Image 1 (cartoon, helix red, strand yellow):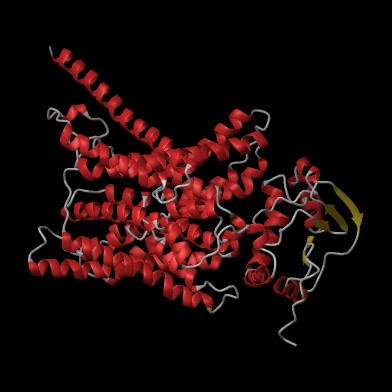
Image 2 (cartoon, rainbow, N blue to C red; image 1 turned 180 degrees about the vertical axis):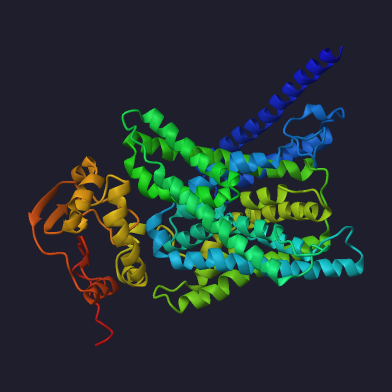
Amino acid sequence: MDNIVTEKRAEESHRQDSADLLIFILLLTLTILTIWLFKHRRFRFLHETGLAMIYGLLVGVVLRYGIHMPRDGTNVILNCNVNASPATVTFDPEVFFNILLPPIIFHAGYSLKRRHFFRNMGSILAYAFLGTVISAFIIGLLMYGTVTLMKHVGHLAGEFFFTDCLFFGAIVSATDPVTVLAIFHELQVDADLYALLFGESVLNDAVAVVLSSSIVAYQPAGDNSHTFEGMALLKSFGMFLGVFSGSFSLGVATGIVTFTKLRDFQLLETALFFLMSWSTFLLAEACGFTGVVAVLFCGITQAHYTFNNLSPESQDRTKQLFELLNFLAENFIFSYMGLTLFTFHNHVFNPMFIVGAFLAVFLGRAANIYPLSLLLNLGRRHKIRSNFQHMMMFAGLRGAMTFALSIRDTATYARQMMFSTTLLIVFFTVWICGGGTTQMLSCQRIRVGVDSDQDNSGPERRSTKQESAWLFRIWYNFDHNYLKPILTHSGPPLTATLPPCCGPLARFLTSPQAYENEGQLKDDDSDLILTDDINLAYGDITVNTDASGVHTSSAGFASGMMSDDLDRELAYGDNEVVMRGTRLVLPMDDSEPPLKDPHF
């Protein structure tokens, strides 16, 4: 008799699981069809993520008030122990972290426009690291004041500590301006603004994850785990640095070792690339690091190195595969957000906490953007203009990462209040801020329809080249002349860049394909590659490559130059840029007036 009951429950559970997944598939299908209609009518007010949230809300209302199911916990699979409900469709938070987040984060790194990213890398790192920490602590302090006020007026029904406030500040500091960036891409907004916003959102997600885990790990000595102790604070800070650097190293190492030689079997090559990429996230989590950081830098590394080793078919397949997975996972999460607003039965909505949270998020974002922009402009030739700053302030949307961090733990009163408030913050920023992007661009008079390649010419390109000259010399020279020849089949052969005494080692490490691709320059992340007409020199051999891809070789100049000459050429945009082992000759517009050396 027990076996019959067990089999019956298993069959009912299987049917319920199928119905649950069918609901989300129908939601995604309906979202795709509606977005196609919006794109056909050029309707930019609502992005697909906002639309997925609306459809999720509608289904949540139906499930909450229109469908009543018997109270039997076996009817739902993948339940959270805390927020399990017989009439809802709930998923284990680890599903989001281990299945849905990796393709989103990896795609962000794999599709990164490295040329604009590295050109603004200093500013991006300042916003992502220092700005996120500032925002988290500003929000935490303001929320602690709000919670203290709630205690005095009797509006707090449970415990809420300062560490909880800091944790809330960390998770809501993770920005996800997917709606804004989609509109930026469609309207072709200024490439530097796009790079600043996209680069900050990509890196600050990783910073927010590590920062939140470090706050959770804060454990002072004694019975009270919420008192301030300097040693415990230093330990948490050390954990932040250790986890981030370890995750970064693991991601880069995994991206480098993904060296496939299966070019003759494109399906196997794509499958191996996919598995190596996904395993980076799981390996980091299993080792006690943060998978988000590891898979992000794995994607950046693979796009820079491994992508050049893939066959043309696999290059197209991997791009399309991760773009598809990113689209489905992101819309799945946003539709689930809308669903949980009505189906999650442990919501704690406190008006004072909600108002304080919105105010704190606004002030925390302002404390991130405006002071740092002021400091960064002191050292930038190409200033971050005030309208760019206002746009970055407005575009600080919250999304998938904030939701995933808040839903991971809803066991206490404080975490339940955080989760409920986080949902409202995500809804507001996606619908209001995301929907008003076009109007904000018009109000701030930010140019649209800008060709990023053409925009890199002229005085602005010269000034940005001077900013990144020192970083370009250190990184690009080493990477182009040594790393890429070893890790890929592109770039100059090592026999042309290493000293003559290292000839046997250079011949051993250089692949035959490197000699075949000697005249092909594949450094899309370089500021200096602006046209298809490039003259390349290795040692005493000059390779001329025109737009049609035909290249010729001839004997020419020696590649050695003094460092002060190199500084002058990188800083003031002369027609030739020379590095040890490689010389780039860039055609310039003869109509441009020469720049004078300010020292004379």
